[in-house]
Image (cartoon, rainbow, N blue to C red; front, side, top):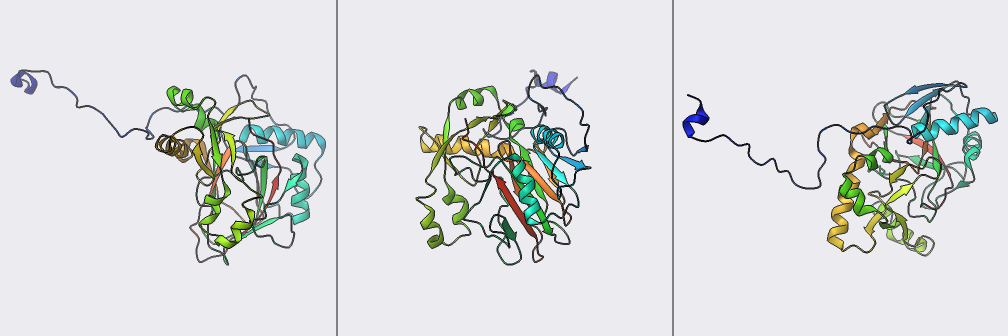
Length: 311
């Protein structure tokens, strides 16, 4: 006689309840291209994908020389399709790094960051200053027009660690539950530079920038101006609240949205060598600088391309 029969009833599975707003296992939609966009080959350089939706190494392009128009056009398509491009062993000078970035528009500087020998190039020297940026974020969303993209050159790498990770925020949006997407339709959020910098910058240095960088509003879900894809556009460093929502409701939703960058299927992780360059679409991604190399030194230089107003 079976156990259930001996008990005189059919066994029932206990309720599979988990705390709300978590990340759950199961299939995820991993779509690299916009709907209807053809997957065309590249003909002017080599492309080595590092994952299904984000990140590719580019071979056969010299960033220290001017780009031919056809190469620039194909690189731009690669950037839109792969979101972050990696170039091994380039060793550009600051002037060459700026010239490459300028193919995508005017450059911008961030007065809150240190610079090196070139005042238009931000320098991140993590031997002399505390490590930070080890949180998922999108650069300068506290600006009315956040950066289009950034070009990062690793001049000195530690003997281990110091990787950088990027997450595809179109994939993050694609996989939200339909009811969450519905609630976010038309929602806007406040972005402020203070939370992202106050943890490691003296207060007296930040106060003069308050008028220059007042809080701004951006859509919670942004439409990419070139591909038309919808993407999450909130991040842990700078997004403080959803406009018109009460604080508890806003905090709960933002916690859920911040978590989406943590899904490995949406990510690529890059291990640097000295002289490597990464170029990423700041509109479509978040990134995370892994701070696991102390007490060793890591020196990177970054140039940012000015962007447009999110919509």
